[in-house]
Length: 172
Image (cartoon, rainbow, N blue to C red):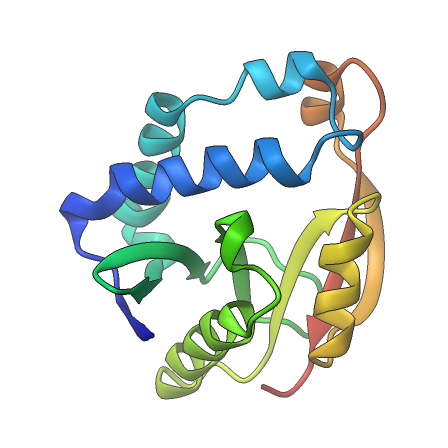
């Protein structure tokens, strides 16, 4: 398996992994209405906006196996972060068939290495509170729960409350 920085032309592949993984792993967490609001095209545009925003200093890594991209992680330096935290892990998604074989740890490691090389020593992320498998993963790699937030914008799309749990690493 190879972990490397994403090439710009691979953004549609990354967006498809996000959409497919969301639909496979978030059933019961988010509503059908929410799932219907997510498309490959809208995700490409959203990710492009994140990656092209020079203020965020964003980056994306992909996991590649046998010339196929099977997962990705995206990080940035957000304008607003919890006190004491600098970098943000924006997303980490892996195709369902390749989950639980170490890909997530390698993609997380790529993000933390990128931050370290740029003198960023702490990191946080947000995950749906009801996504127990993701929360367990982040806890297993040293993430400490630092708070929760009711996301009103996503809750409106979803049709019921969506709470985001924040995890952080003071030292990466």
